Length: 319
Image (cartoon, rainbow, N blue to C red; front, side):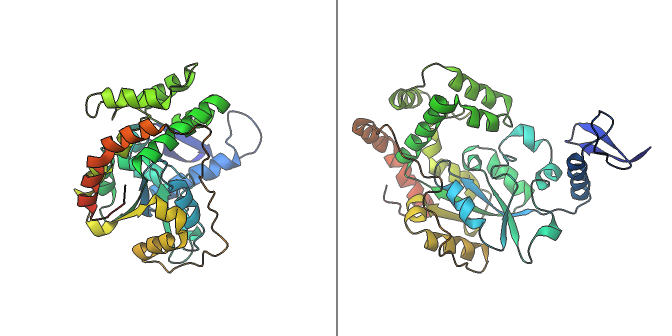
């Protein structure tokens, strides 16, 4: 005897007994699983929260800090996972918007006039995301945090190296389990190698490759810093007043002003951030310093791209 059946994860039918039972066995589901399925039913019937804005990137530019700070606002509720990876990963996107909505708090748990959001920094980089996000909701607001591209690249490399040396890449590999198969393969190969590639070797390989040769590969260091190409895709679909661009340095050095800028952009009341801001969120100390010659080489490479970014956005970053 069954109460209902539903399409689970877009792939198979799951049948529940009339009452969930807590004993072990293949014939019964746990109470936690029961409520997860009940939430899926509610979402499929239209009872769901939807994000009002997204933090779309860039990776290693302060998105973790911004996500943590905004989550302190009484009228802003984050998704259950910081990085849902819905629009950038085909394996998730094929599950459909109902699956995506299960990652957010149900409406009755939202404070009055509260909004939901999630932060997935790969959205800025992955080419298909701009159109997918627009098709999902053309009225969404988007927040991008940009960091000086040489520092961003080195910060990303240093983080990956630390994971390789200290944890055999497990934190990244656990997250990559939700990625598309080619990306999972790239990460497994990276962390399976006995010697982690030096930053200079990695840069040499990317700069010697044909244009966009690394777009399909993960991770990469240099291509992520071509912000004008990435933002241009979003401007093709969204109005300029739907996209807020923050400077990483401003976020770190004048955090309150940056957060007020975000809440003004979202049309929300400003929050008293005093005593709630911790500048060490997402901060990384380097055990290996970036070589001056490599820095100068990358600065020369990024210079025309940074000028194009300024023309596109009308902003001056001073890079």
